[in-house]
Image (cartoon, rainbow, N blue to C red):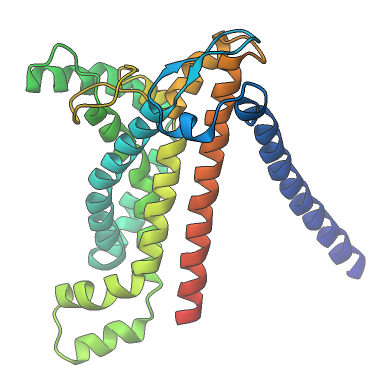
Length: 294
């Protein structure tokens, strides 16, 4: 028995160390490839983050312009619009699943949410391209329907299951005595939800929102199919734009390996990794605070 336990412990430890090593290797590789924009081609971090002039040279001589501000602003606009759309619906669905009708949610809604998680990104993008983009074009009488709004709606549908699942679990995990005490004081169901359950589950709900935002920042294919990939800052939600992931996905294959253009795209990938790392730190901070409060 002890031998089996020791063997399983060794396997689990080995898998954990492998995952740590793999994560560190990916981070080191992205740093090695992405930092060349600054060390090899002599561009500044300020230029990369805040300049809108994007015209890298597709060779090893350099001398081009690598301002990625348009892509950064496009990513922020699309992701926060998606969050603005998805969060109210996700919170309402989580309350319904965890409080109002838990039996129905266990049989019907929870499997449906899990199915949404498993749908490939290209399917969301294709539906957005063939249904949503023409709908926006006809509704607002635009010359084209590719827009920040289309990207935000597609991303909102994609992050809806993540926010819903995490929020529902957080509401379910609120101690039962909180509800009983509130009902004992004469509170109605909606008062319990608004004044007891949601405040108590707030750290978990915020975790779900941040995880959804993290997925939204990393999504490439579905967004690239509906935003128009226009190299300009968005004038509003109805204008096309570009973002970090779409630029990497569409341009990496055609850029000369090791050239200034290719290196600038690797720098974008490094920036996405750093953004994801920040999101992870925020989630850990919220989780640790929740554990201390409990």
